Length: 67
Image 1 (cartoon, rainbow, N blue to C red):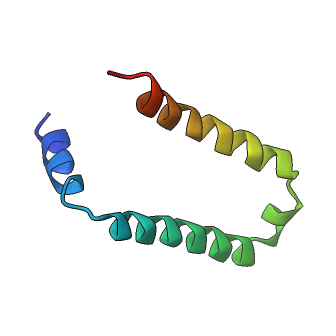
Image 2 (tube, rainbow, N blue to C red):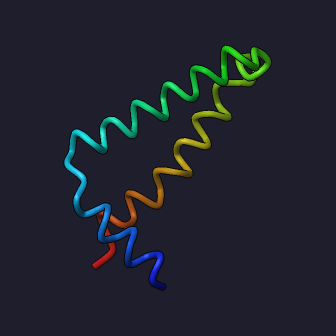
């Protein structure tokens, strides 16, 4: 459990700008992968929508319902 405590301690130090930089890094990584592997662009957009919704379900649950 010490790893999770350490990560929690570090995440609490992040400012909102740091979080946005992490998001921008993820977007840029996705763009780089799309350029390096063009076959990713032929995948139906609905797969990406489904993956996005599944990833957001956990976040919405924690924000709205977890106490």
